[in-house]
Length: 180
Image (cartoon, rainbow, N blue to C red; front, side, top):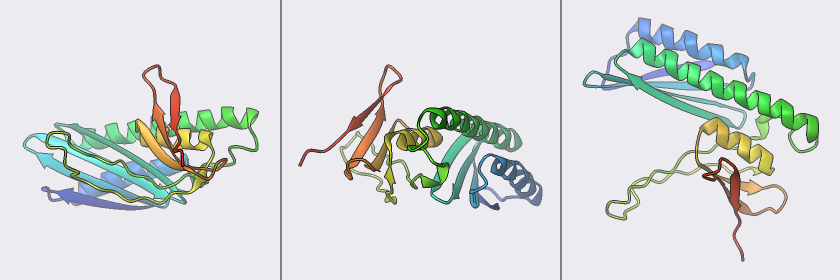
């Protein structure tokens, strides 16, 4: 996997670059389809933040962590992503046993990104574009869990319509479907 290490407001030393590369490459054991990783390290005062974004064959996985030590932040975010990937793989195995035809492999997941807006002035402050591929509801749930988001926009493979999957307060899921 190709790992790109970037710095925002911090100079990335060779030691930090090598450490991040070594740790993030360990994540490829969970998904062989991962091709690239972007590690962004930033410092704000004494607060060190590490964001990791993994991509490959339609999969997008993102995690971030901040603390007072850059090496510890790298360790924490990699651990966090590893737990999320293991959880996904375990769910995937469970779903495969009961639904062989619905959930072939993780490579059918779309690339998606979160949309952030600020309600203070009611202005749209950020806009993101993402590719949409047809997914079953189970695949959409799996992708949303990988991204650790509360909602996920996808094209429903059964209906052909764009739908929004969201996490309910009772830890279950809901789907918003447009009427035309």
